Image (cartoon, rainbow, N blue to C red):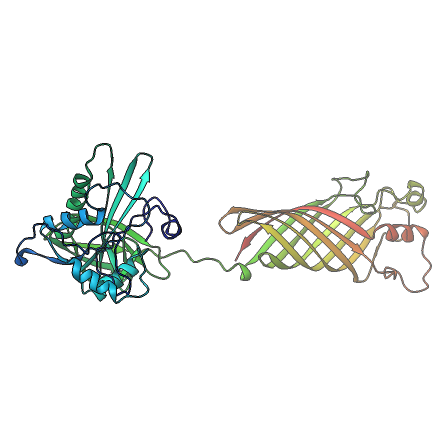
Amino acid sequence: MVFKGFGLSRLLYHPLILVLAVAVLPATGYRLQAAGLNNKLEVPVEDDSSLLFDLAVFPYQIGDQIPTPERTLPEIVYSQLAISGHFNLVSAEEVAAALDEQIPLDTTCFEIDCLAEYGEKLQADYVAAIGAQQVREKYSIEIRIIDVLKQRMEALEIGEYNPEANQLETTISRIIAKVVEKLIQPMGMLSIETIPEQSRIDIDGQAVGIAPLELELPGGTSYQISAVRLGYNETQKMVYVEPKDTIQILLKLSLAPKKMKKSASVRLFACGGLPFNQSSSTIDSRITLDGGNSYGLALTVGEIWRLGFGAYTYTNYIHDISTEIWQQYGATEEPRTEARVYYSSFIHARGNDHVQVFIGAGLVALRQGIEVTLLQQSEKERKRTSQIEVGWLLEAGLEVQLYHNIFSQFEMIYAQNFSTTDTWKKPDEIVDPFWDEAFNAFRYFTVLRINVGYRF
């Protein structure tokens, strides 16, 4: 637990906190002298029958010293607690005797577990810790009460003291009155059930048990109730517990959406596009987007690193064979190309769940063909097709989530045949130079396509 306004490290190493642990610490060999509580305090104490809680004042002053001409701050707190009539205060002699037996003595104790341990050894019901911090010309005084048995903070109050007004005892009296009010108010019952059952219940961030359960809590206070269960969304509710009343609440938890395992995602795409360049050129000044088309399917497995598989067709024209060559052969227009490509690739994607860029490379198996339109009276060959050959592939693009598991890709894919064997003709076959020119030109091609697919 951290003192409001400054952290634990400042509490331990910087003189900003005045700590008064209102429980006798375990025995120590050091005689406590700082607060002067080894002297008897003449304060009114009611009959023991009216005392509710065992409490002891621990007289340490740490941090900023509040100027008190007659009595120390611990002495003032001790007297105000005694006046309240709700505490059986451990005497100064008992505190001193216990301190004599404790070596070494932790004089910086301000944490719940530390204070609860001190209170347990003293058989006290509560431990109070008091801190003071100077803020310009004023002081901020905090009093917190720790339940020794439950090891939790039962009350915390802060007051402001102005030395110019010279009302220190009045300030402390008001703070203690609020603390006492919280401690002595009647208890209320809180009955909690959950759907599904066996959900963990947290109150104000601390786990208290498994539902269904009933709890006795100080009445007149609001509590943040949370139900937690694996596979369900956490449910919270603010509940006000009436004194001497039983509050029943039912918390319903909804199933948490299943998170898709990214490592196992599979995407299947339908692909369509246009040749990005004429068949015989790489990406250069002779780029065209007309005259051909491309269709296919693609399958990827994975998220960041993916295995890709696909097949597509390609058709276009060869533009940079000289007109003289194909006209001499008797063609009426530029040769048309076609290819069937089957590929596998390794892809790396970067981005978020909605937009990703990707790049990949792989191997292809392809069959290429070239066809020409001849004059009707010509008896020359109109089409030749290669055998299945091997090549390589590059791909890059952008993937966008359209809706839930529906995705679209904008992709450029480049394939090249690196076979050196002319499989489109028989060995030692003599053919027209036109076919040599055409197939030598048609070794690489680029497609710009749009893919639409579903993620499984």
